[in-house]
Image 1: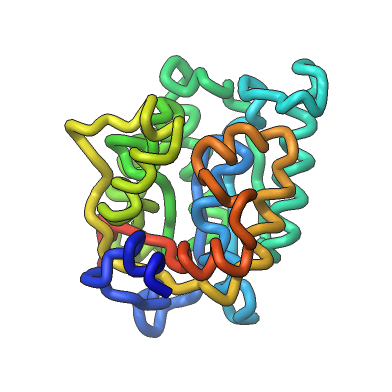
Image 2 (image 1 turned 120 degrees about the vertical axis):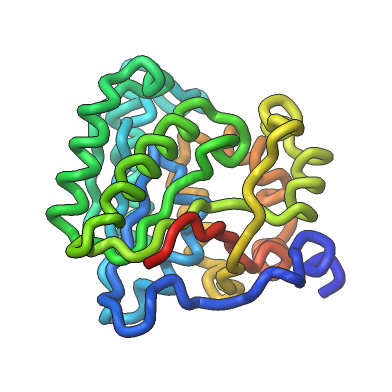
Length: 261
């Protein structure tokens, strides 16, 4: 499919190897908001088909500061988005979901040591081999909470990985290839408004193939009913192009390897 070549970077190595060889297949994604897991939905759904994989999703706010999409009253938003997240986690067959009450759109002013302590407790409890989060410069498309969450995760995990007995062996940032960024800057209102063009996302190290996960990826988008406006603003045309075409075009999720041991 021609459009597939238009959005992907064919120079990025295509691989499903997110775990070091011989290491336990335990993966943890650390994000700020319900719906952030959309960016790694294909990866998680595909990995979770393997009974030897253990997956964890940690979401640090309930998304109470976001838009309601006209679906619920504002005072019910945090509760509703938590339910939406739980539905998404069920679709993706995630083994463990942890949701916290740090302030949405307020992570810059939150207690950063408390957040890092929460990350420490997550690592101690679940002992992931691989950790995923956003990049620490852009936060995918310029969201301040994403940047803060990534910086704190990176600070803790890179220090943790210096320990000889640390379970964590790899830290990845979710990212996008240049062709996809260029397309987003033309079509996505969110990217046009927020993406810092002078900085940019980190170069991908690996492209995780997940064309087979189209149905689950679509279901996860639909699970976040209150966020339909935001989803449409970031993933333009996802609701205008037939799913079987859309997900054959956007058939890879990209990651930048930050640290490995």
